[in-house]
Amino acid sequence: MIYYVLPILSIILLFTFIYFIGGFLLFKNVLIRKNKRNYPLLPYEQDTSFFDDEIVKSIYTGSAEKGTLHAYLKQNNTNKWVILCHGYAADARTMSIFAKQYYEKGYNVLSIDARAHGDSGGKIIGMGWLEKHDIISWCNYLIKNYGNDVTITLFGISMGAATLMMICGEDDLPTNVTSIIEDSGYDNIYEVFKHSLFKKYYILSFIPLSALRFFTNNIAYYDLKEEASAIESLNKCKVPMLFIRGSKDTSVPVSSFNRMYEACNAPKQQLIIENAKHSEGCTTDANMYWSNIFEFLNKYDKEECK
Image 1 (tube, rainbow, N blue to C red):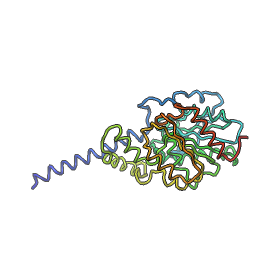
Image 2: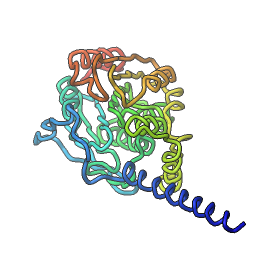
Image 3: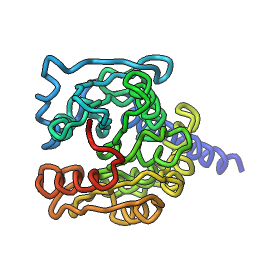
Image 4: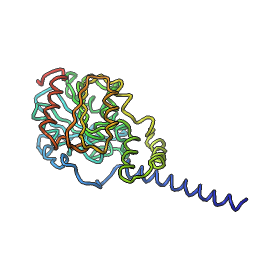
């Protein structure tokens, strides 16, 4: 009998070892702060010149976690603000072309470094679920330092967009937030990882993702599958929202976009940019992109710029 038991135990131990090592490596490579990006900049990320202006301020607030969060701020003669939220493995400076457009329309600009990115603190990347708390911190920073009458537009791309959808319906989102624009966001972290793994490696994703889920539960303290979703927040959302995607976006499935749009109970619009890949609508058809954004903002923002 022992001749059968030992091989079976060896196989179980080997599988368990591979399972946990694989999960840890996936967690380390995907969700731990990176010192160097391992893929090229997207077209919109290449121009960072807006933040080279000498009147741009580099500012900090707490915490992530009990450390500091960093952002760039450029003030205009207005009470209207836009908070810019970048994508995965990017930073505040890569939002330069967005900052320029909003600033030229009279907005004050706050472009933030997400936790574990750029000059912000933190070691673990939450793919939006952890970062959503930092959005509240930045909104409160603007209200505290620039007055209770500030109005805030939230704009995010990819991971930044998912972050905004995960916070849009929360009770502690200040009423100063008058509009939200999400570009190429996703509704569920687990589902977007599953889609990405299959698309890139043609592998069944259950095993690596269940291992990754173990580490997010025990190190990052959130459930990758059951908890980290935008749907519940979208169901409670009351802030007008514009949903943007590219017709050739293969990173986020169309089904995900449709679920998010249907789940949102706030006033909403959608914009599909033809021939645009993931996060590239702004460079594929800039005229359509920006004309629709500012038409949306003119419709839903409560006050004109002062």
